[in-house]
Length: 528
Image 1: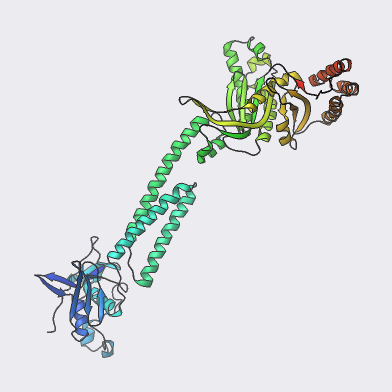
Image 2: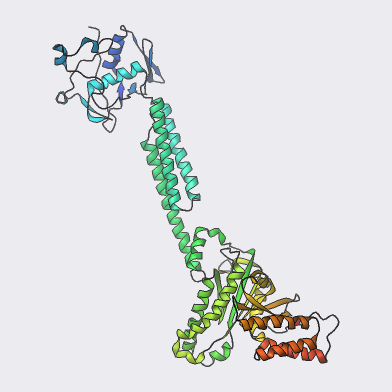
């Protein structure tokens, strides 16, 4: 005979035969497989040379064929397809001459049984009952065609690098992606790249890289990071919501949750708009009710006032007795903060009409009037206070000026008063009437004050405003007699206008007591 070869198949841990051993050791001797021995015989009984490196077989040479093996001396099989893909003929048909001789000329022929009952069937990637004889034929064809799969130690290194690189990319990109759908899309794109890359190198270069472990590792990494992000977001969301749910609208709380860096611990300078609101004659009002009634009244008053602030992108800073302090433009920055503050002020005055509906049994306390002051300026905003106790608030001269402006509303008999800085930012959106140029207590720099009347006014009010501005110009030009006549004419239109009465008194005083040459038209207030 020409020799013999073993036909044992060694499945992997899952029972699937993916590679075939070309040689095995038995009693210190190496023996070739049936496939390898058949090929050697086909090549004129060429010798079989086994090459080892580092104690492992890495090459088998038969004639001019150099066969690269895995570390176990096996050949990763490039199966052609399901069983019977390699031409298979019945032995009876051959013996009866039904198969032409040309079907075997120039070919290697393996003779054996493919019936399942002889127990020479194995689990292969293309089926659970793959004939062992066809596995041997597949190995021979792989070697002869030089297109066996490539799987060695280098491919294991590639698998490890793929796992680490993918996990690194996921760990870097996912935390910086804010939306969950975007994260999932990125992960699926990464998996698609892996699948396509694996398919490409497999189909083009016959390189067999592991797919299961990289996909499993990437998926585990992605799930863990998503869970971590979820826990972190939930913790951050709970912290922000608990800290700001009473001060901000839910929409702004959500923005802070998505971007907590907007909260600056320690304070930073920003241009904001500050609003102060106070109930007129609150001391006298509180003396006429019981403590319980006062508490219910304040709740009925504060609820709509707070809603007006929050609904206009404002932040409730604090309650000071019956006063409300709010800031606009922080912690979530809005370029429209002066407009938002003025709109909140208008809404607050309108809401006063409906406060009585909340406490109808206290109807005797109504109507209630309030004074509101708004100023825009640079302040320090952030979590200010001690290391044990701090609040998100603002400090600075602009805050003090806003408080002074609010207190002056009762002097001029107006509901809403704004500074000249705020006026310049909102004059295209609201109707305003210039009131006075003053120095508030504790300030040397004069400020122009305006009455904020709303987005629209009646025709009569618009006419009053126009004539008022002409009278104010005459007053500033020291034409006090002319100004007195103009203000007197306005007194016929609005006889109870408090600001108008102030200017009538001033004009009469300056007519009999001429002003100094350096008079600048600024009125100095000596009280808060």
